[in-house]
Image (cartoon, rainbow, N blue to C red):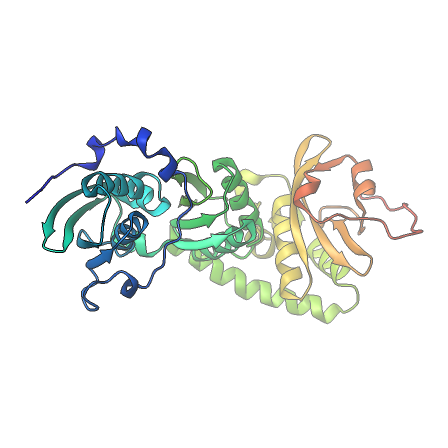
Length: 367
């Protein structure tokens, strides 16, 4: 009988010899019956190739199992070397393994016509965290999951992202975009910590830890109050009839005192609609919320005016997307060049383009 117990963290010497293996893409099929050697016990698996061995160990990790057996049939390669390489590959190079696994060790023995490997896995994540990993592809899907998390005030988001070539700063920007797209839950930007697993690769697990500015119970009460108040405001907007952006502008200008005092809580839709006092950020979030509730399309723009931080909205109109702000002294719908001429600056690539209609004049002023 040939047995060996090798803690994974002592097998780093395999990195050089396994470099080509560690760089390949993973195709992991979830249903356990494709690996099961018994049809009933999900911890007893079978494999005939090195990739099958990797997939079997990945399956154990995906289920949060601490122990499992992999039976190797018709296996002509070096079993001990492949077991060490497969365990290292799962724990260091696969996104889920890099995120969840502390180390892996194994025993193996020859059993007449096959090899039997006993795998023991030590985790640094809970089974609940492993089960909560969501698979997404692309920035739109990431933003969608972030919006859902922010609406629920979730403290943690764990995403397995395919075709990922970005960094932590990019994820931080997506959190900001999601925050300004959830005005009904935007009560202060959460402090965000981002971690990526593994360090490189086209598939990564993105772990976000979100710390909110108040207790979740308090935030949910604010969310409930804001929802009721916003519905009442939306009904008033609808009752005004006519042009939707103009109706929202008129209502906000008539009821909200615009002030620049972000430290006193005026930078939320809650401040605008409930306390009646808000800065440009609070007005922009309130405008976006009312627009959404009344069937319009808009977004919150984060930029500057004459070098000072400032927020406003871009809204969909019959003539295309246009800039508008409830902080302006009179109502205006401006194209990109018009608002730029008034001293505003923003990252145009992040927002819809506001192109003047053919033959239109540029006579409006936002001051």
